[in-house]
Image 1 (cartoon, rainbow, N blue to C red):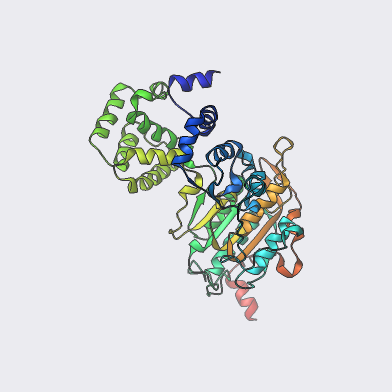
Image 2 (image 1 turned 90 degrees about the horizontal axis):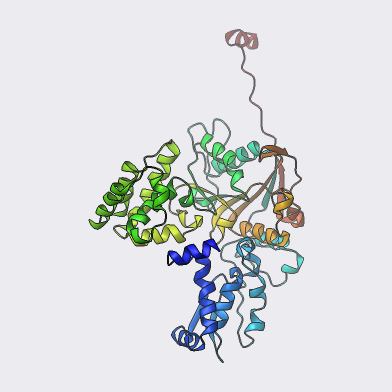
Length: 447
């Protein structure tokens, strides 16, 4: 079709072709396959539960020997990428595929408490409890919190963080938000994560954090590097680096970027300028920011590019292959707000999972976008096991989302958690007293 012809004309492969065509080439050439088996005699695979059919076929070709040297790590309970082609059945059949293998299981979690591990096992189902991990200590109870709306839910999260930090603002104690004491094992804002099923749940959280003067970073599953105008800024640099293969120049020409502009960028490239400086030149002369958000994103991009120095190729490769998770900055003194998918592999002292409601977990708001309920269970399990010490599961009785108001029950996944593991809360926020009329009421009280 047109797309395949276009790739051939550009002498290019897309990411899927890198594996699919390699598999086809090796299957059709036995001598070549044997040569690569000899070259790669030891194969290690991480996150084996997330491999897709093409990756599985490549692995089988490379390990098709009498005694393959293969080492894989995986957890079928953390298989959450079915939407992008991953198939959890491959890890479940591993011992059938390689009957001579030895199996080693972890018995102790050095991250989560017993209560968090038991609760997350319950979410997966009773069958998961046998032989499940144990923690180093019992830990505090998990808190399941019911709120009236998405706004009060976000306010609860922000107030709780402020309280656990021992106060953020001068009047934290005066307003009774905090008692002035930091929670045990909480040292900084970086110890907190707020996890969501959808990016659409983030705006109320951002507002609440801003209202409480709490610094934060947002990390999505999809990278903002692929959003405009950041994407165009990176594409201009890519086109200037490989002008003979750039198919984007025509679209840029329509936006007023001409041959002289390309020549200017290419000349700066020849001078071996740092990546950050090249980005600033492109931004200033070819793609000036139009909004405050553009300025903020460009500034962030330039900061991220600085460690690459003058290695433009490495920077472009990183921006092309990187995911949203790669933009997470663990050392920064900020609360992390991220999707459940993006949180995989990370850990935090205290975790809030907001939106634990029917329709969001499992995600079933639209008939044409149904998800696998079992994968949704595993997704919640992954989120819960990011918590080291404190875990909050919140839900709103009323939520405005996608232009309409939903009144959903709490997620059925929470019903499986045993009562002795949790502390239930239905928040009742105090209303501010009405202002009086001043001096007269003061004298009335005195009388």
